[in-house]
Amino acid sequence: MINRRTFVKTVAGGAAALALTKQHAGAQTRGNQPNVLFVSIDDINDWIGALGGHPDVRTPRLDELASRGTLFTRAYCSVPVCNGSRVSTLTGLHPFTTGVYNNSQRFDNLDPVPLTLPAYFLQQDYLVFGAGKVFHKRNEGTWDDYTWKIPDPLPPGRPLNGIPGAGDFDWGPVNVSDERMGDARVVDWASEKLQQNHLQPFFLACGLFKPHLPWYVPQPYFDLYPPASITLPEVLANDLDDIPPIGQEWANPDRDHARVLQTNNWQKAVAGYLAAITFADTQFGRLLDALDQSRYANDTIIILWSDHGWHLGEKLHWRKFALWEEATRVPLIVVAPGVTSPGTVCERTVSLLDLFPTLIDLCMLPAIDAHEGRSLVPLLEDPAAPWDHPALTTWLPDNHSLRTERWRYIRYNDGTEELYDHDVDPLEWHNLANEAGYAGEKARLAAQLLGQVPTSISPPVPEVRPALAQNYPNPFSQDTTIEFVLPEPGSVRMTIYSAQGVTIRELVQRHLSRGHHVIQWDGRNAAGRPVASGLYFCRLQAGSFVETRRLLLIR
Image (cartoon, rainbow, N blue to C red; front, side):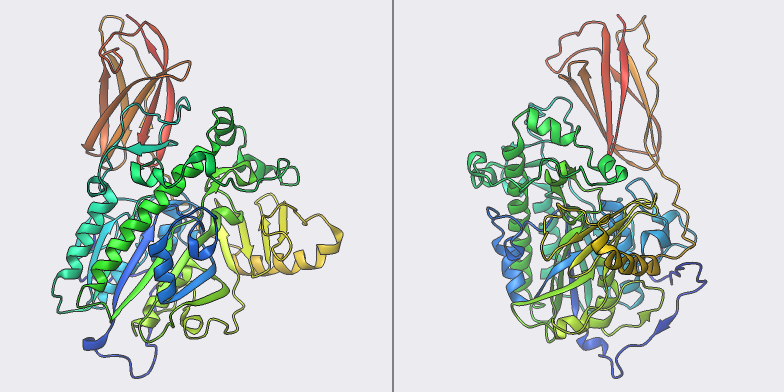
């Protein structure tokens, strides 16, 4: 953690120091600088009513927010995974600048540590508060007050979807009221901040966890989406036939999609995702109500964003971890008093990298020359203003997607390519990269993409992963020892299941310190009855990391 008033320097592409320049002559005084409510919703794709992403979805409060300000219809993440996207958004730097691409890397191990959005607002004498999942990792960033995401209650009998070894890839109702859910409690905390009397302008970040997996939310939200009436995504059965090998490998149709189809779960899964979205919408609505009822209602900027999109069978793929439209398009809504007009829609292509410089501009603060995004204020003032800035998305080193208002161009690290014309192919079903008639357009987009990526990129930050040790059974004991290592404090869930995929036992340890730990399994199932000697599997989950090993039980 950085001391509250310590100046945090940053580098970008080898720059040695942070250059600050003042924007807007005649900047606002301390007394009338706006507050900021910065809301992130984890894993929500474009399935909100205002974006028309899914015909069945109910998001009245997000739609209300869109009616108050500017809705960006072509907003994209810079990395299609939680940690990489949040580090990029909250530092204003591409992953090839920071070296942070995935969930197992820590940006705060860099020397020097990149300047983050909350740390920057602290420098500017804002009060800085954070609640829930803002950064991907716990306690990253610098805050005056902060509470991490709060765990949800879990339903019994998991997995509820009947998919063997599903782990968190699961959905179904949990028999609790909203008030007991983690996101509701995070909103309670943030709402309390909005009711307090602050003598300085504040930056309040609130991160909602749903609709991140697992999709366990209270029953009333599932009642809104009977699976039999759910509209499935439009999918082309041979959609991967014209996709390069790397893209096919990432899609991995024999994994999640095959399991969903084999267990007749597709409509149920979509219903679970929609239920989780509506739950998140309801919690956001409570936060919006708290702001409206506060003394800060008229001088607070609201920015709502998601860290990346999500596939639910499109391209025969589930989750994020890809460079197609479903994984990269995100909701982005900005309400800036005195700048935005109610109900405006901007169709320009923008990036989450643009949020940091946009907030600096809106709050009349010194600009950061190292930032790799640009202020969206010209588009907030005039959504149709000229804008030739395609959105660049990167997934793992040297794999990139460039999105313009019409085209998506993907270039993998082996030189293979994809090209889609969204004017006639919004579902990205037809890869035009190898068609001679599009060679000129492809070359133009390739030059534009390569012009944004430096020839010398920062090496990936070393991954910091939990580790599950090889099991060594003790035939002279009723217990089987399961050893593991945590690189940072946290909680783990250990699931024991049979070779047939049936869950035998779940073992949970919370609030563990960093380092080596041991769990003893007594060889009994959840009902307390001994299981037979033989081969089992042990699945370790620590945060988003999952690893499975064979486990031999000898009696």
